[in-house]
Amino acid sequence: MEQYVLIFLGLLLFLGFLRSFFTVKQQTAAIVERFGRFHSIRTSGLHLKIPFVDKIVARVGLKIQQLDVIVETKTKDDVFVKLKVSVQYVVIREKVYEAFYKLEYPHDQITSYVFDVVRAEVPKMKLDDVFVKKDDIAIAVKSELQDAMLDYGYDIIKTLVTDIDPDSQVKEAMNRINASEREKIAAQFEGDAARILIVEKAKAEAESKRLQGQGIADQRREIARGLEESVEVLNKVGINSQEASALIVVTQHYDTLQSIGEATNTNLILLPNSPQAGSDMLNNMVASFTASNQIGEAMKEQKALTINQKKTENGDT
Image 1 (cartoon, helix red, strand yellow):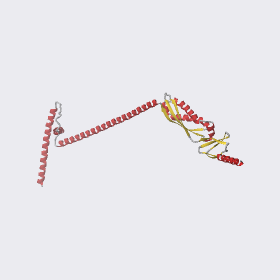
Image 2: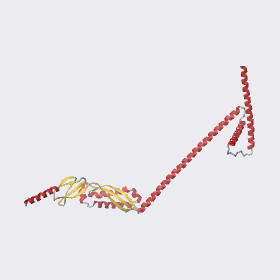
Image 3: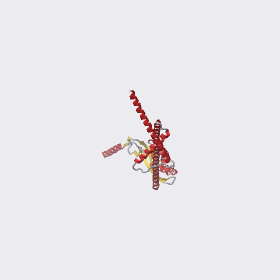
Image 4: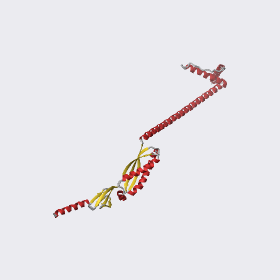
């Protein structure tokens, strides 16, 4: 009988020895109670406890956790909107005791503060301001949570407003407004492009006219230079300027008539319609014929003089 008792006690001691060792994982804290009262907090590693006396009542994670809270509220311009607020928080290593013993449901506590802050801030803003100032809302939520949760051993790492979802009818209206605005911008760009084309076309036409006018001016200068040279040549043979001008005009008139006659599709000739046009044309023709005769006589005299000079030179030789 005594042998069985010893065996039983040996088994109890062996099991107690095995249960006296325990491990704590990385980024975790173990809370140990002795006879129902708090005893110690153990961090990662291998630890020893008294069997049947010490008890691990909880293991608290020290990693960063995230809680997503969806809050429905109304804006200043009476638009119902849903906001998704993401809160990242962590248990402070030095305050694991407060995190476990002071606050039983941290998620519910954080959710309550998020609801309170969002429903206090959003009704002060219009819908457009909610989209623009969502970072301000997140900062207000973090500030409120930081002050409240610090006493419970929690540190608020970051708070973000990750989604803003207005009422479906409001979203449809916003989509129509955005589409209309995009069409307006597109029409404005098209109008600007059309104005640029008109301006560039006008510049091109102005440049073309400038070049055309420059060409006409150059042509007229060349005509004037040619007329001047013709008058000088006629003056050298004894024809005055008036007779030379008449001869040139009549010559150009005949040249024009000849070019018109050579054109196969031309059947119209425009003549001056003034009362004295015929008389002036006749006088010009008479003057031109006289000038032509004088030119012919002068050329004959010049030719005879040249021949006599050659004969004289040959006789002397």
